[in-house]
Image 1 (cartoon, rainbow, N blue to C red):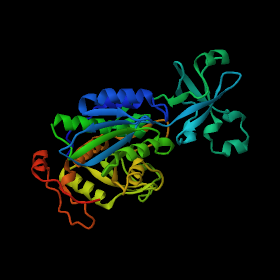
Image 2 (cartoon, one colour):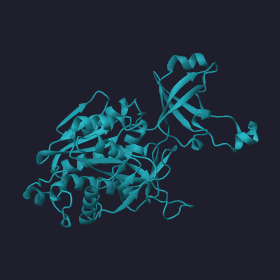
Image 3 (cartoon, one colour):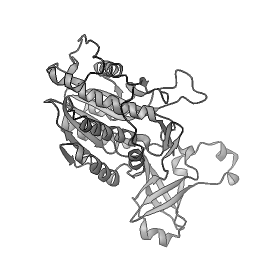
Image 4 (cartoon, helix red, strand yellow):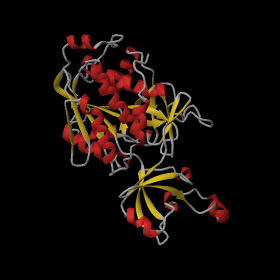
Length: 381
């Protein structure tokens, strides 16, 4: 059963605030403003990660929950004699979805532009049969070169222009990858404060940078924090659309949050998977299992960049149209993700984390008061 009401307005703001990899200033400032009343301290490291600390009931261990702030985008490579912009991608795109889409060029002021490419009417048969590449596109600002250069320089960032729309029980907007994860982490901090509940151990809520170009921020953050437990908050593929085989779906919209088992950067710690499944059952949180054939998250970085390894897993939001112009998520899955993370960070001390431990199922609706009365487990990683 879901415990909260979805904050659609927060999700709208967090998705529509720009922040391409390496250009996260605007979204960083927004997040800091949102979380300042919810945590004990906030710092920004040299690479640009926001590291917020909420003290736990026990400071003998630490939890790192990471959601990357950056969204896929572009960088201006060249301004030609007619004012058209040539671009390079920041992160991976599905190029076939870019034709005639609006973008925002973030120069000395924001300018609205349109993705252009060679018209199909003048393509050769061979060109028509070829799948497009990102470098086939240019940005048309509708201005001559001398006007463009007043505001735009080589090296400026470009992001997609799409507002949030509710479609049935779903949310449709750009950059759910990974502003959905940022939303989950903010709402978890808010839920902990509203319930006057402390996390089991000191919680480091990290809003990381440059995930889309190699999980760089999470690597830096993990090296600094050296967490005992690590949760990545990100999206995953919901291939539940026409043509999908049952073995290909990965996840489905509306079936709940996804507990990661495997992706190309991580084999989730078996103890963490078992714990998250037990929490989901005890708290009646809808969930499904995720095995992602290609792609990774900050979880792999946190697991490997911690001395001795962190006990790492991931909470994933099923999303259709990932890395396209617009992405879609189900409200049930978003809220279930908030509920699962909140319950997990509150109940870590109820689990025996020793290898080979035989854990009993967590009690139904394990309350924070019950957790307070139980001594913290002293299992080793």
